[in-house]
Length: 350
Ligand code: SAH
Image 1 (cartoon, rainbow, N blue to C red):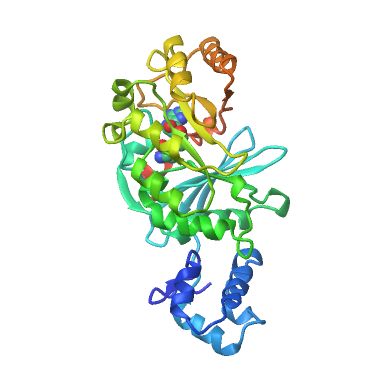
Image 2: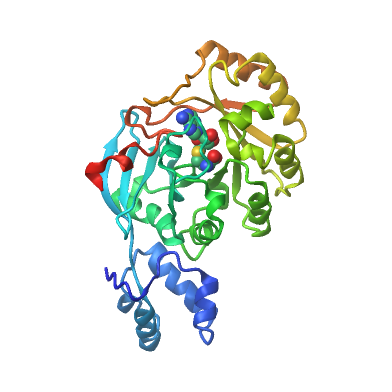
Protein backbone atom coordinates (compact mmCIF):
# COMPACT_ATOMS: atom_id res chain seq x y z
CA UNK A 1 0.00 0.00 0.00
CA UNK A 2 1.51 3.32 -1.06
CA UNK A 3 1.55 6.04 1.60
CA UNK A 4 3.11 8.87 -0.37
CA UNK A 5 2.39 11.89 1.84
CA UNK A 6 2.33 14.29 -1.13
CA UNK A 7 -0.88 12.71 -2.30
CA UNK A 8 -4.28 12.48 -0.65
CA UNK A 9 -5.67 9.38 1.06
CA UNK A 10 -8.26 7.84 -1.28
CA UNK A 11 -9.93 6.15 1.71
CA UNK A 12 -12.57 8.58 2.93
CA UNK A 13 -12.46 10.82 -0.17
CA UNK A 14 -16.04 11.81 -0.94
CA UNK A 15 -17.94 11.34 -4.16
CA UNK A 16 -18.49 15.12 -4.34
CA UNK A 17 -14.75 15.77 -4.13
CA UNK A 18 -14.04 13.24 -6.88
CA UNK A 19 -16.79 14.66 -9.10
CA UNK A 20 -15.36 18.16 -8.72
CA UNK A 21 -11.77 17.10 -9.24
CA UNK A 22 -12.46 14.89 -12.25
CA UNK A 23 -15.33 16.83 -13.77
CA UNK A 24 -15.03 15.13 -17.18
CA UNK A 25 -15.48 11.61 -15.76
CA UNK A 26 -18.82 9.86 -15.98
CA UNK A 27 -20.30 9.48 -12.45
CA UNK A 28 -20.52 5.69 -12.75
CA UNK A 29 -16.72 5.58 -13.00
CA UNK A 30 -16.52 6.89 -9.44
CA UNK A 31 -18.95 4.19 -8.31
CA UNK A 32 -16.80 1.56 -10.00
CA UNK A 33 -13.77 2.79 -8.05
CA UNK A 34 -15.69 2.77 -4.77
CA UNK A 35 -16.77 -0.77 -5.48
CA UNK A 36 -13.18 -1.84 -6.02
CA UNK A 37 -11.95 -0.20 -2.85
CA UNK A 38 -14.76 -0.66 -0.33
CA UNK A 39 -16.30 -3.88 -1.59
CA UNK A 40 -13.42 -5.84 -3.12
CA UNK A 41 -10.67 -4.47 -0.87
CA UNK A 42 -8.52 -3.26 -3.76
CA UNK A 43 -5.62 -1.00 -2.67
CA UNK A 44 -3.89 -0.48 -5.99
CA UNK A 45 -5.32 1.56 -8.87
CA UNK A 46 -3.49 -0.56 -11.44
CA UNK A 47 -5.74 -3.52 -10.47
CA UNK A 48 -8.93 -1.65 -11.42
CA UNK A 49 -9.13 -3.35 -14.77
CA UNK A 50 -12.49 -1.96 -15.90
CA UNK A 51 -11.16 1.61 -15.67
CA UNK A 52 -9.04 3.11 -18.44
CA UNK A 53 -5.26 3.24 -18.05
CA UNK A 54 -5.34 7.04 -18.32
CA UNK A 55 -7.80 7.36 -15.46
CA UNK A 56 -5.83 4.92 -13.35
CA UNK A 57 -2.66 6.91 -13.81
CA UNK A 58 -4.48 10.18 -12.97
CA UNK A 59 -5.75 8.56 -9.79
CA UNK A 60 -2.32 7.31 -8.82
CA UNK A 61 -0.93 10.85 -9.23
CA UNK A 62 -3.53 12.24 -6.80
CA UNK A 63 -4.05 9.53 -4.23
CA UNK A 64 -2.52 6.92 -2.00
CA UNK A 65 -4.23 4.36 0.26
CA UNK A 66 -3.73 4.48 3.99
CA UNK A 67 -5.55 2.63 6.78
CA UNK A 68 -5.18 2.64 10.58
CA UNK A 69 -2.72 -0.02 11.73
CA UNK A 70 -3.51 -2.47 14.53
CA UNK A 71 -1.29 -1.75 17.52
CA UNK A 72 -2.91 -4.27 19.87
CA UNK A 73 -6.00 -6.44 20.38
CA UNK A 74 -7.51 -7.11 23.80
CA UNK A 75 -9.99 -9.98 24.07
CA UNK A 76 -12.92 -9.81 26.48
CA UNK A 77 -14.45 -12.88 28.10
CA UNK A 78 -17.70 -12.03 26.32
CA UNK A 79 -16.06 -12.41 22.89
CA UNK A 80 -15.60 -8.68 22.21
CA UNK A 81 -12.25 -7.42 20.96
CA UNK A 82 -10.89 -3.97 21.76
CA UNK A 83 -8.54 -2.74 19.05
CA UNK A 84 -5.94 -0.07 19.64
CA UNK A 85 -5.27 1.52 16.26
CA UNK A 86 -2.39 3.71 15.19
CA UNK A 87 -3.06 6.54 12.73
CA UNK A 88 -0.64 8.04 10.19
CA UNK A 89 0.69 10.67 12.62
CA UNK A 90 1.13 8.12 15.44
CA UNK A 91 -2.09 9.14 17.25
CA UNK A 92 -3.96 6.22 18.85
CA UNK A 93 -7.68 5.47 18.94
CA UNK A 94 -9.73 2.57 20.21
CA UNK A 95 -12.55 0.65 18.48
CA UNK A 96 -14.49 -2.24 19.96
CA UNK A 97 -15.89 -5.18 17.97
CA UNK A 98 -18.83 -6.86 19.70
CA UNK A 99 -20.28 -10.12 18.38
CA UNK A 100 -23.71 -11.55 19.09
CA UNK A 101 -25.64 -14.33 17.35
CA UNK A 102 -27.42 -12.02 14.95
CA UNK A 103 -24.93 -9.20 14.42
CA UNK A 104 -21.32 -8.04 14.65
CA UNK A 105 -21.24 -4.47 15.88
CA UNK A 106 -18.30 -2.10 15.68
CA UNK A 107 -18.15 0.80 18.14
CA UNK A 108 -15.84 3.33 16.50
CA UNK A 109 -14.15 6.60 17.43
CA UNK A 110 -14.50 9.98 15.74
CA UNK A 111 -11.93 12.06 17.63
CA UNK A 112 -8.68 11.48 19.48
CA UNK A 113 -10.00 12.36 22.94
CA UNK A 114 -13.02 14.64 23.39
CA UNK A 115 -13.60 18.22 24.49
CA UNK A 116 -17.02 17.86 26.12
CA UNK A 117 -15.72 16.95 29.55
CA UNK A 118 -18.65 14.79 30.74
CA UNK A 119 -17.83 13.99 34.37
CA UNK A 120 -18.66 10.25 34.13
CA UNK A 121 -16.63 9.51 30.97
CA UNK A 122 -13.00 8.41 30.97
CA UNK A 123 -12.36 9.71 27.44
CA UNK A 124 -12.89 13.23 28.85
CA UNK A 125 -9.62 12.92 30.78
CA UNK A 126 -7.73 13.06 27.46
CA UNK A 127 -9.14 16.40 26.36
CA UNK A 128 -9.44 16.84 22.60
CA UNK A 129 -6.22 15.98 20.77
CA UNK A 130 -7.62 16.16 17.25
CA UNK A 131 -10.48 15.28 14.94
CA UNK A 132 -10.31 12.13 12.84
CA UNK A 133 -10.52 12.39 9.06
CA UNK A 134 -13.28 10.57 7.13
CA UNK A 135 -10.65 8.04 6.04
CA UNK A 136 -9.61 7.40 9.64
CA UNK A 137 -13.25 6.91 10.64
CA UNK A 138 -14.27 4.49 7.89
CA UNK A 139 -10.73 3.05 7.99
CA UNK A 140 -11.47 1.60 11.45
CA UNK A 141 -14.16 -0.62 9.86
CA UNK A 142 -11.88 -1.59 6.98
CA UNK A 143 -8.84 -2.46 9.08
CA UNK A 144 -10.90 -4.48 11.55
CA UNK A 145 -12.84 -6.30 8.82
CA UNK A 146 -9.53 -7.28 7.23
CA UNK A 147 -8.42 -8.69 10.59
CA UNK A 148 -11.52 -10.85 10.98
CA UNK A 149 -12.80 -13.89 9.12
CA UNK A 150 -15.62 -13.31 6.59
CA UNK A 151 -18.36 -14.65 8.89
CA UNK A 152 -17.28 -12.14 11.54
CA UNK A 153 -17.48 -9.12 9.23
CA UNK A 154 -19.08 -6.01 10.69
CA UNK A 155 -22.86 -5.78 10.15
CA UNK A 156 -23.69 -2.82 12.44
CA UNK A 157 -21.81 0.33 13.38
CA UNK A 158 -22.28 2.57 16.40
CA UNK A 159 -20.47 5.91 16.67
CA UNK A 160 -20.07 5.59 20.43
CA UNK A 161 -16.31 5.30 20.90
CA UNK A 162 -13.93 8.14 21.68
CA UNK A 163 -15.15 11.62 20.80
CA UNK A 164 -18.32 13.52 19.99
CA UNK A 165 -19.30 12.66 16.39
CA UNK A 166 -21.25 15.87 15.78
CA UNK A 167 -18.29 17.95 16.94
CA UNK A 168 -16.54 16.58 13.83
CA UNK A 169 -19.53 16.76 11.52
CA UNK A 170 -18.20 16.91 7.93
CA UNK A 171 -15.75 14.00 8.16
CA UNK A 172 -18.40 11.96 10.00
CA UNK A 173 -20.94 12.66 7.24
CA UNK A 174 -18.43 11.78 4.50
CA UNK A 175 -17.63 8.51 6.30
CA UNK A 176 -21.33 7.72 6.77
CA UNK A 177 -22.08 8.24 3.09
CA UNK A 178 -19.31 5.83 2.07
CA UNK A 179 -20.27 3.34 4.76
CA UNK A 180 -23.89 3.14 3.62
CA UNK A 181 -23.61 3.68 -0.16
CA UNK A 182 -24.66 0.64 -2.21
CA UNK A 183 -21.60 1.17 -4.42
CA UNK A 184 -19.21 1.44 -1.45
CA UNK A 185 -19.38 -0.39 1.91
CA UNK A 186 -23.09 -1.32 1.65
CA UNK A 187 -24.12 -1.22 5.32
CA UNK A 188 -27.83 -0.40 5.67
CA UNK A 189 -28.57 3.05 7.16
CA UNK A 190 -30.82 1.21 9.64
CA UNK A 191 -27.77 -0.52 11.04
CA UNK A 192 -25.72 2.60 11.73
CA UNK A 193 -26.22 4.78 14.81
CA UNK A 194 -24.54 8.09 15.63
CA UNK A 195 -24.51 8.95 19.33
CA UNK A 196 -24.43 12.56 20.45
CA UNK A 197 -24.30 14.45 23.72
CA UNK A 198 -26.91 16.79 22.24
CA UNK A 199 -25.24 19.55 20.19
CA UNK A 200 -28.53 21.02 19.03
CA UNK A 201 -27.18 23.17 16.18
CA UNK A 202 -25.23 20.23 14.84
CA UNK A 203 -28.21 17.89 15.15
CA UNK A 204 -30.09 20.31 12.90
CA UNK A 205 -27.17 20.43 10.44
CA UNK A 206 -26.95 16.63 10.50
CA UNK A 207 -30.63 16.33 9.69
CA UNK A 208 -30.17 18.59 6.65
CA UNK A 209 -27.62 16.14 5.25
CA UNK A 210 -30.56 13.82 4.50
CA UNK A 211 -28.74 10.59 5.25
CA UNK A 212 -31.36 9.02 7.58
CA UNK A 213 -28.89 7.50 9.99
CA UNK A 214 -30.21 6.58 13.46
CA UNK A 215 -29.47 9.10 16.17
CA UNK A 216 -28.83 8.23 19.81
CA UNK A 217 -29.02 11.09 22.28
CA UNK A 218 -27.14 10.87 25.57
CA UNK A 219 -29.63 12.48 27.93
CA UNK A 220 -28.40 11.12 31.25
CA UNK A 221 -30.40 13.47 33.51
CA UNK A 222 -33.90 14.84 33.89
CA UNK A 223 -33.19 18.30 35.33
CA UNK A 224 -30.79 20.99 34.14
CA UNK A 225 -28.91 21.28 37.42
CA UNK A 226 -27.92 17.60 37.37
CA UNK A 227 -27.27 17.57 33.62
CA UNK A 228 -25.08 20.69 33.87
CA UNK A 229 -22.98 18.85 36.41
CA UNK A 230 -22.73 15.64 34.40
CA UNK A 231 -22.50 17.16 30.92
CA UNK A 232 -21.29 20.78 30.78
CA UNK A 233 -22.62 21.06 27.19
CA UNK A 234 -26.07 21.29 28.81
CA UNK A 235 -25.29 24.90 29.77
CA UNK A 236 -25.28 25.73 26.06
CA UNK A 237 -28.13 23.42 25.04
CA UNK A 238 -30.40 22.84 28.05
CA UNK A 239 -32.86 19.97 28.27
CA UNK A 240 -35.87 21.85 26.88
CA UNK A 241 -33.93 23.10 23.85
CA UNK A 242 -32.73 19.55 23.20
CA UNK A 243 -36.20 18.03 23.58
CA UNK A 244 -37.71 20.67 21.24
CA UNK A 245 -35.05 19.87 18.65
CA UNK A 246 -35.90 16.15 18.83
CA UNK A 247 -39.64 16.83 18.61
CA UNK A 248 -39.09 18.78 15.39
CA UNK A 249 -36.65 16.32 13.83
CA UNK A 250 -38.35 14.68 10.84
CA UNK A 251 -38.06 10.90 11.08
CA UNK A 252 -38.77 8.38 8.35
CA UNK A 253 -41.75 6.07 9.02
CA UNK A 254 -40.94 3.24 11.46
CA UNK A 255 -37.86 5.05 12.72
CA UNK A 256 -37.33 6.44 16.21
CA UNK A 257 -34.54 8.01 18.18
CA UNK A 258 -32.60 6.19 20.85
CA UNK A 259 -32.36 7.95 24.20
CA UNK A 260 -29.34 6.85 26.19
CA UNK A 261 -29.47 7.21 29.93
CA UNK A 262 -26.41 6.28 32.00
CA UNK A 263 -27.64 5.28 35.46
CA UNK A 264 -25.53 6.70 38.29
CA UNK A 265 -26.39 5.67 41.83
CA UNK A 266 -27.89 8.49 43.91
CA UNK A 267 -27.46 11.01 41.05
CA UNK A 268 -30.06 10.31 38.36
CA UNK A 269 -31.62 6.94 39.27
CA UNK A 270 -34.48 7.93 41.60
CA UNK A 271 -38.17 7.16 41.14
CA UNK A 272 -38.70 10.91 40.53
CA UNK A 273 -36.11 10.78 37.74
CA UNK A 274 -37.99 7.94 36.07
CA UNK A 275 -41.20 9.97 36.38
CA UNK A 276 -39.59 13.14 34.94
CA UNK A 277 -37.98 11.15 32.12
CA UNK A 278 -41.36 9.78 31.06
CA UNK A 279 -42.75 13.32 30.95
CA UNK A 280 -39.79 14.69 28.96
CA UNK A 281 -40.02 11.95 26.34
CA UNK A 282 -43.79 11.85 26.07
CA UNK A 283 -43.97 13.36 22.54
CA UNK A 284 -40.71 11.99 21.16
CA UNK A 285 -40.70 8.79 19.09
CA UNK A 286 -37.96 6.90 20.90
CA UNK A 287 -36.70 3.84 22.63
CA UNK A 288 -34.74 4.19 25.84
CA UNK A 289 -31.45 2.45 26.56
CA UNK A 290 -30.60 2.43 30.25
CA UNK A 291 -26.85 1.98 30.70
CA UNK A 292 -25.71 1.08 34.23
CA UNK A 293 -22.55 3.13 34.79
CA UNK A 294 -19.32 1.39 33.76
CA UNK A 295 -16.78 2.21 36.45
CA UNK A 296 -13.14 3.08 36.10
CA UNK A 297 -10.50 3.67 38.71
CA UNK A 298 -10.58 7.44 39.07
CA UNK A 299 -14.36 7.76 39.06
CA UNK A 300 -16.52 9.11 41.89
CA UNK A 301 -19.67 7.40 40.49
CA UNK A 302 -21.17 3.96 40.93
CA UNK A 303 -23.86 2.01 39.08
CA UNK A 304 -27.18 1.55 40.92
CA UNK A 305 -28.09 -1.78 42.51
CA UNK A 306 -29.87 -4.07 40.04
CA UNK A 307 -33.13 -3.71 41.97
CA UNK A 308 -33.24 0.06 41.34
CA UNK A 309 -32.23 -0.38 37.69
CA UNK A 310 -35.13 -2.80 37.13
CA UNK A 311 -37.53 -0.52 39.01
CA UNK A 312 -36.52 2.40 36.78
CA UNK A 313 -37.06 0.28 33.68
CA UNK A 314 -40.39 -1.10 34.92
CA UNK A 315 -41.72 2.41 35.51
CA UNK A 316 -40.91 3.43 31.93
CA UNK A 317 -42.41 0.25 30.50
CA UNK A 318 -45.58 0.87 32.53
CA UNK A 319 -45.71 4.29 30.82
CA UNK A 320 -45.61 2.49 27.44
CA UNK A 321 -42.00 3.20 26.53
CA UNK A 322 -39.67 0.63 25.01
CA UNK A 323 -36.99 0.66 27.69
CA UNK A 324 -34.00 -1.66 27.64
CA UNK A 325 -31.15 -2.24 30.02
CA UNK A 326 -28.08 -2.15 27.83
CA UNK A 327 -26.05 -5.21 28.49
CA UNK A 328 -22.55 -4.15 29.44
CA UNK A 329 -19.99 -5.41 26.96
CA UNK A 330 -16.25 -5.69 27.32
CA UNK A 331 -16.14 -4.15 30.81
CA UNK A 332 -13.33 -6.55 31.80
CA UNK A 333 -11.03 -4.96 29.19
CA UNK A 334 -12.14 -1.33 29.70
CA UNK A 335 -13.91 -1.54 26.37
CA UNK A 336 -17.40 -0.47 27.42
CA UNK A 337 -19.11 2.88 26.90
CA UNK A 338 -17.14 5.68 28.48
CA UNK A 339 -14.14 3.49 29.29
CA UNK A 340 -12.09 4.14 26.17
CA UNK A 341 -8.90 6.10 26.71
CA UNK A 342 -6.87 4.19 29.22
CA UNK A 343 -4.68 2.31 26.79
CA UNK A 344 -4.18 5.17 24.41
CA UNK A 345 -2.89 7.19 27.35
CA UNK A 346 -0.37 4.54 28.26
CA UNK A 347 3.04 6.16 27.57
CA UNK A 348 4.52 2.82 26.49
CA UNK A 349 2.46 3.04 23.32
CA UNK A 350 3.43 6.54 22.31
N1 SAH B 1 -20.03 11.74 22.64
C1 SAH B 1 -21.06 10.83 22.25
C2 SAH B 1 -20.58 9.42 21.98
C3 SAH B 1 -19.58 8.80 22.92
S1 SAH B 1 -20.16 8.23 24.47
C4 SAH B 1 -22.19 10.87 23.26
O1 SAH B 1 -22.08 11.58 24.24
O2 SAH B 1 -23.23 10.26 23.02
C5 SAH B 1 -21.26 6.90 24.11
C6 SAH B 1 -22.25 6.64 25.25
O3 SAH B 1 -21.56 6.18 26.43
C7 SAH B 1 -23.01 7.89 25.70
O4 SAH B 1 -24.38 7.59 25.84
C8 SAH B 1 -22.43 8.19 27.07
O5 SAH B 1 -23.37 8.86 27.88
C9 SAH B 1 -22.11 6.81 27.57
N2 SAH B 1 -21.09 6.75 28.61
C10 SAH B 1 -20.01 7.54 28.76
N3 SAH B 1 -19.30 7.17 29.85
C11 SAH B 1 -19.95 6.11 30.39
C12 SAH B 1 -19.70 5.25 31.50
N4 SAH B 1 -18.61 5.41 32.24
N5 SAH B 1 -20.57 4.27 31.75
C13 SAH B 1 -21.64 4.06 30.96
N6 SAH B 1 -21.91 4.80 29.88
C14 SAH B 1 -21.08 5.83 29.59
